[in-house]
Amino acid sequence: MRFLVIAVALVASACASFDPVPLEQLAFRDRLQTEEQDGLRVSVAVLSREVARQAFGVNLQKRGIQPVWIEIENRTDKNFWFMMTGLDPNYFSAHEAAYMNHFRFGGQTNKEMDAYFSELDLERDINAGAMRMGFAFANETIGTKEVRVRLYSNKDVRTFEFFVSIPGVVSEWDQKDLKVIADHVEIDTDDDQELREALLTLPCCTQRENGTGEGDPLNIVLIRGIPALKAFIATGWDEAIFQKDFRALFGATYLYGRPPDIQFQKSRRRVDSINLVQLWITPIRYQGDVVLVGSVSRNIDPNVDEAVQYVAEDLATAGMVENFGMVGGVGAVSRDEPRQNFANAPYWTAGGRTVLRISTDPVELTDIDFFDWQWERRVRRAGDEGIEP
Image 1 (tube, one colour):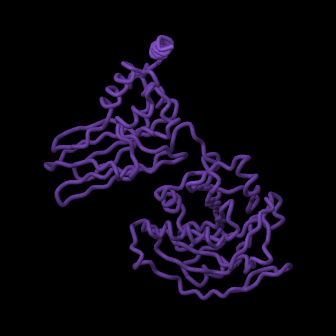
Image 2 (cartoon, rainbow, N blue to C red):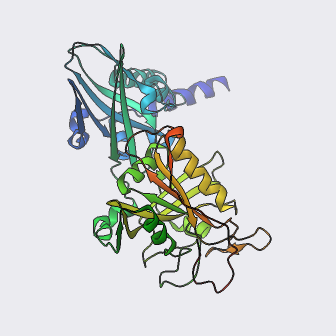
């Protein structure tokens, strides 16, 4: 019996395949994004799943690992240190990434894997005049990945922020011409009260493709388009592709005859607990900025106010919110008499619509300004055409 176990181990070891493709044969550096700051030059690229598998000889995606290629050139007279936690607080070391992909009876092959991963690891010390390049190992992100390179020196911290589209993953808005949608403007105002009145004219809920019916309440407004997208990505939200399983959970929803222009999801510890944000570009502009309206919901929680509060707090505590306000939305729906969305899931709400103006610079919680708007709850009844302030 012991001989059989040893024989099986030897055969498995012999069959273990670790044959990475040399980096110079892969074209990922063609997609480098570069930023420069006072003598520091940083370039980054995120590998697709297939290229990562070729580069490292194993399926990193299976372990939730996403390699990020980073090049740092230090032309200053200071020594800097690359802070991995800026990229991902839960990053993997090179040895961890290799160990998680070891073959069960890999033997010598596993040692070769350890050495190879370490060889490609980015060195953290970026001394004056030095050039460093290599991989950092982050948790996998779907769609667009925020790559934050933070360099630390004595009384000096430099931060380089990139938003990189992941090759091979096509989000729904990659398939749309959002600029054409954004160019359609019906209301353009610089006045807070005029903005409030414009927001009150928006539909209460999502609709069917033909513009009929009332689905999920439109309970959030975001002001500033691209900064809003970056805010979600920076706070750990993934781009969502509205696949069949999502349609079953949340229903197929439309506004202006379009499916959501932009979608984000954030899963909780339990796989079946999903926060979903669906956003549409409206024909409203405020101080030149795009205005988005959307629906925030959780697939297993009918209290949609809890879901939108989570989003508001998530963005605000991350320093992403410049202004906050509330306007009327769907109107109050009681827990005793819940309404249903297009997936026949019940919901209840106080009826308001949260308005967030996204900042392009970090904002402390104590520095968030409030729109000077009054909002009172109003019970919404069947046949109501609009929601009063």
